[in-house]
Image (cartoon, rainbow, N blue to C red; front, side, top):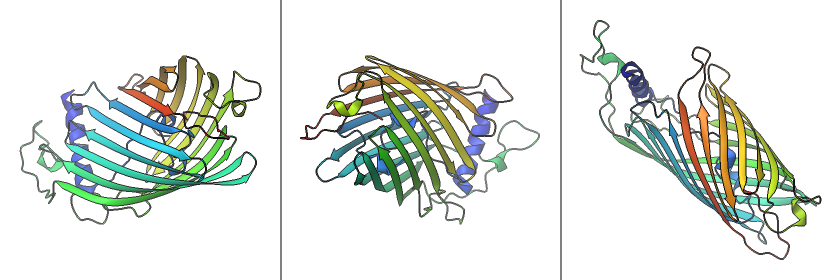
Length: 327
């Protein structure tokens, strides 16, 4: 355990000095409103509030925590949507903390009946903080297990605040099939505590597909103005950020009030993560729990993570209402 803890601290120390950065990631972004694509803000066609919490690798003493709170709303007559979100990422027991403030605008263009294009833009302010004592690789002597040297690293600052911008687009058919792409951190802003050329937040590319099948009504969701009580959903997404890449395939079902699903995620290298989701829906409120089981080629049973996702929607009555789906 101690060896693992030291390795993570060394890695984090390297992250802070050379700063190759990677965004936080949830097990299933469909449970985290408009986190994959700014063009998905307002996709529920309602006022939506989301609260997401993730605890990763709790077996280690330096737990990793991520919290995200969001609000988004669709304005039916104006064919646009807005959203705001706040994310807090706490790594290695507060050694490295990231605060992210997002504001999103999305506009919808009607191509023809049931066919739409959604374009979104996101403005972000990051506030990164360094806390606690760090142990760097140059402090270790090969003949001793403990740090015996003083580090030559000079971080210069304990905080960094910087702006960021992202864009995305999605093609939507009947709110049942969605195909989208997005690009995050377009300008690759400097995010390290030292001014070095490679201290940047790498540009991230995302592609995603989701599909929903109503299991309750023969005429589909568009024959109703309220929530469907029974539906099947599938989703696929791929994201790449510098050397890191991630592919997820998931399927789930809602048979009111029971929500269940399973996903499989891989980085194409050494990580294979099956996830299991279980939850409940009561009217406009939905709550679910997600369990990740990390597996690798070298070790069949690795660490794990826990997630709690809460979503609440307020139905906005329109003359020609769209169906409300959480995803």
